[in-house]
Every structure is written in C-alpha cells, then in structure tokens.
Length: 393
Image (cartoon, rainbow, N blue to C red):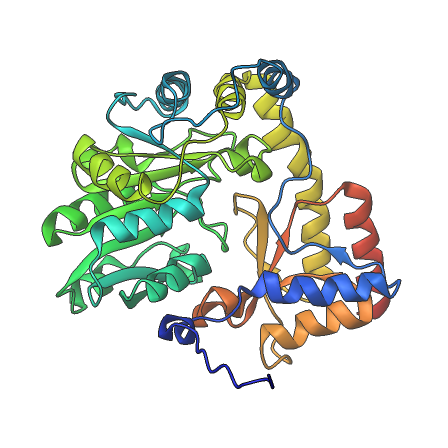
C-alpha cells in the first residue's frame, strides 16, 4: 500500500501560545555548546546548590524501605502538610490548618493550572501582571480564559496601580495573579500592597493568587505573606515553592494555602489529573522545612550576596541601570537608549560574548527595554561572564 496523506491538525488552543522561550532558546544554547562555544548561562532561575544534608539523608533512608514505593494520596501525607503549616507559622506568623487549608503541589506551575481550572470558566477574565511570569498568561490562554493585563512600572516600585485597576472594566474577571518579591523585576513585597490587594479582592469578588517563592532570597528583613492580612484567607490563595528557598527545583515540591473550600475545589481538579508525590520525597521535603536559620542565612543570603555584586558589575558593563533594592534570585536592569529593544542587546551578548541573559520582552510589553540576569551560577562562571562582556562592550 502506498503512503496516504494523514491530515491531523493540532487542537486550536495551540494557536494561542508559542513554545516556552527557555525551551526554544535552550536548544540553540545546546547546539552552541556542542560546537565548543562554552556559553555561560545567566538566564534561568534554577538554584545550583544542593538541599540541606539532612534533606538528602532523609530521602535516601526512606527510599530504601521496601514499603515506600506505592501510590500516595493526592492530598499529600500528613507529615508534609504539618511541616508546611509549621513553616508558615515559624516564618510568616500565619496559622494554617494542615488538614484543610494546605495543598501540596508538584511545583507552582502545576498550581497555576489547577487553580485556573478550579475557578475560571472559558471566556472569563484573569488579571495578569505586565511584566510577569509568562506561565500566568500561557496557561490561561490554553484554558480559554481572557487575559486582562495590568501594568507594573519602575517608578512605582513595580507595585500595582490600584487607581488604574479600579478604573478598568472588571466584569467577568475571576482571578488575579500577583508575585512578590516580584519576578522578573525584584520589586519588594510590601504590607501596604497586600492590604490593598485583599480589599480589592473583597470589593470586586475576585480571587487574588500571590506567588511567593522568593521571600527568602537576599532578604534579611521580615518575611511577608499575603495571608498575614486579616480576611485574606477568605478571598486569596498563596503559593510557596521549595525550588528557590530550599535549593530543590528539580524535586517539584510546592504548596498552596487558602480556605478549606478553595482547597476542596482545587483538589477535585488535581485528583483527576495526577497522583501524590513519592513518599520518601515528601518526607525529605518535610525535613527541609525544618532547616535551621543558619542554613537559610548561608543558602539564601550569603551564597547570593557575592553573585549579586558580580551581576551588578555585569549590568554596569552593559550600560544598564538598576535598582539596588531589588530582592530575589535575579537582577533586572534597563537597557541603554541606543538599543531598539532588549533582544537586540541579549543576542549581541550571546553571540559576541557567549553569555546567555534574558530579554525582558518575554515577561510582557512593559519589559521590552529590560534584561534579567540570574544569580544561579557559581561565582567563577559569573566572573567569566563579566570578563567576556567587558572585552566586547
């Protein structure tokens, strides 16, 4: 038999999104490395240090047990939920019922999917920050939600403009994404912003979801949570991830915290999509939540302090300006006037200096004249990147 044309087309939803920037660019970087060009990557926020020794030891010990390898409950084991509640009490002063107000996640990306499925019907609106994490937009589009962008601006410390928000057409808007300390801009979390967000949610019947994975990184002050605001638990959800604060990006362990009704709705979605995480990994994560203050100081402050200093030198060498008060795992800088846009600069850095940094356009139109440098590379590699850039620029 001869070959017949097989005209299968993808689902229409794929026309609403492109391949994730880092997935696409990663293939180009891999090819350049295969050609011997030795690219220094300062683009992705994947911590390069290991979790605590106790965390790894717990995983190894528990994985050797013969009865540890079966399916696990989607709600997560009690030990992990209790450790998550203790973590929120210890660091944020927030009381959570581990049985009903916490849901472990396979990372925050999964949480974005499940929360949107649980709360937003096709055609309903989702408020997404610009600039903001691209997945807020892409997953909302895939699920048929209507994107309503709200602007974050440098002159306001990358905080929401509530006067502007109140003037927007909010009919049919169900969900609002926020992220502090902000990624990609490094804008700090502010109690006053959180208080305004809770009032905004209450006034408009919108659920605010705060993505909070960066509150430990280069932050020696009080750790802030949206759930510290009275009434927040009734109308808000907060994500927290072990990827950044506990050096566990590949483990895919995170959590959400909110009221018991929202948890039930989200669990209804999640339980039909996946199963619980490997039990030894859950027990190891529970151990990680008990890391000492000293471990967090070394891992989240001291490790990144020197890298941040080098990143600031790289920004200066590129002619970029930046706010030294930024927090989090990245440094965000505004490009000099001669460049048409950020990608013009980042492509030159990649192909002439062999250093990969992120153009801000991938985070929204308000990021078009900014670049982002990740602190997730060893000091030596960052110094190598600095030297290469200085030779070119």
